[in-house]
Image 1 (tube, rainbow, N blue to C red):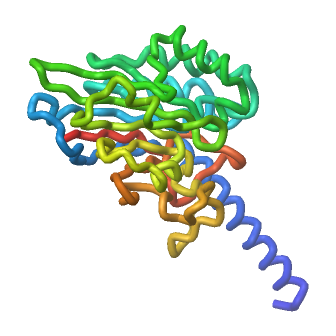
Image 2 (image 1 turned 45 degrees about the vertical axis):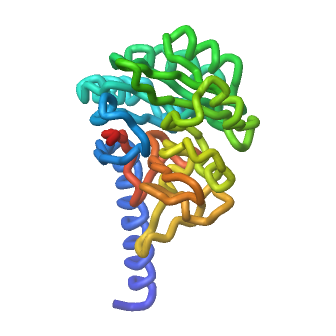
Length: 273
């Protein structure tokens, strides 16, 4: 093989490799994993232990994530028969026209304890009021610095939510203004970075998204872009914050690029104990 033939073969090989990688990236972006875990919520009464929570976040309906994909998320979630469904924000991507269709589809989610959600940074960027209106129209309860108290036979636990760290003012004091001093609290916070400064010890578990698990994670666990002030601490999975435990979901959609690598989209199923 002469030099010219070698160069042509090399370029062709690199092109084929790049094409294969791109094709895989598109495939992985739609390859949803149902991730099940059991996590303690300190102080949770026995009457609530075993509660199955499905957590969905960072759906990003838009040019990269079509409505059929959102419909599949809804169908899969309902088949899991959760007690409670929680949404972590970032429902749309790039344009306000994607907000209403996504939330209308999410309005088909069903759980006996209800469906609740918070806002993400993209919701503020693309249409905060439209997203709030869409959640209300879909029958999804918004928890922006607010809470929902669940009671059974005198036992209680609190579900709270805070505004997004980048685009709002998260305030746990406002969120828990109607809670008692001894109530166990499950918190929704779109951006897990908020947990670094969270001091209210009633919050025993936080569900977050935002980082997409890095979205593009290369061999050796290298994630070139993680939208966090704390490096890859809050990349994904169960993380210990200073005063609480955080489950960081890899989320379901994509942003910036329409592909994923080493970070499959996931539906999180959490059994509380």
